[in-house]
Length: 308
View 1 (tube, rainbow, N blue to C red):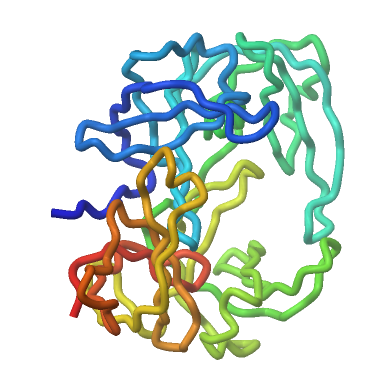
View 2: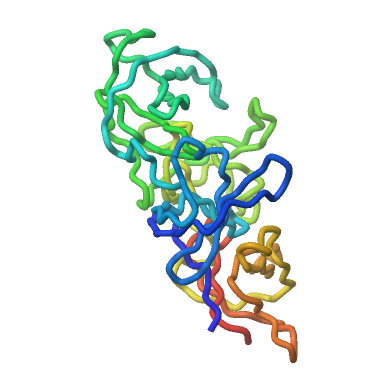
């Protein structure tokens, strides 16, 4: 029986390193295999100082599943763990503006692997930290082997919690300094948030409207990643989708995975990964049944159930 790639963001899974391959010039990947035999690729350049070897078992977090269903892994760091506190020495402090033209500070340190670890904050602490000073940081996120930090004595009161739904008011629609169009949201404390307009133009949002969004996670920039309630799909429910096509994933030679394309309720294409072909020798399906295990950028994240 075919096995669906039903990994969930945030869960940790054990993989065995099967081999190291080169897909393009100077672009190496580890081929990883989980206990069920499903394979994934991990880009090697981010983890050169992790000491990985063929045959080794490693634990990886499902760090990210994009709106096309592609899975991105983050192996356990050899020296640090997320949500734990460590001491770092400040190398530099740089000031910049975020997309809302608010001032933010990038406080950089060096971790035990030689990578730059960054704390992005809107507020410099009262003790006026400076290069050479030691600071206690909490590891908020590890992504591509890089640490993203927060200063532990900064107040987290009122911080939005991942997995919960909150109400936001749509204040405006604007094209910001990155030349991308956004919905500008505000919460009850008048803190500002962004939703990229193109992902949600099917939701028929209007300025002045109050909407509910869940916090998926906190990004490496320190801001929460929001996802509005979908007007049709609900997580955990099964729906019928129009089958469009399937293609071998571009890494499928090594993973065996297929890229499945269907149409959603709006007629937009939705992609997801599956470990085997959904087509039989006799026919190509017109409809398939899928389970929705999440919503990302306005599109359902799907797990194959059966052909119809």
